[in-house]
Image (cartoon, rainbow, N blue to C red):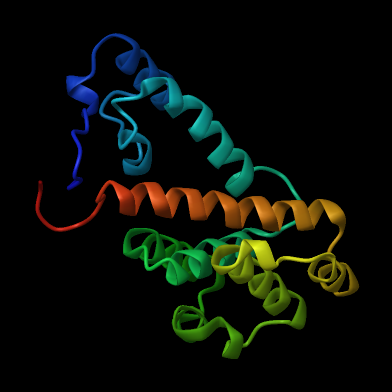
Length: 182
């Protein structure tokens, strides 16, 4: 894995980082901590809370489906030009939908993809939150409600978009997945 900062691998970890990696891996020998978490290896105190937040938002129980969550992750990553997340979450979206044409269209322009009105509005909201968070207004939330999203689902949409904006920025800001090293 290439990055512009030092990343400590599982087999090189000592002290607190070693304990954190072992906690994440649940004692599985030869396991691998995801790259976006290992990127934080120089700040081990941040890894477990980030892993817990990521798991809760992206995979935990809630009102959004896994397809909706992957749609948001993909669209936010496309907008942010985060190749690593775009590719990963497009693959996960494909696994869930088994629809190559849909995934390709979502990557090109979700606005023209074969999506329900509710999912398109969800992605419009996530896109606006990504590009112009200051422009989000009460009416945007009202539009989502009108299309059947509960307030809990709107919170999930917002946190999924915000999480991937954060992850995209850390990954891009530290060069994860970029060719070459510093």
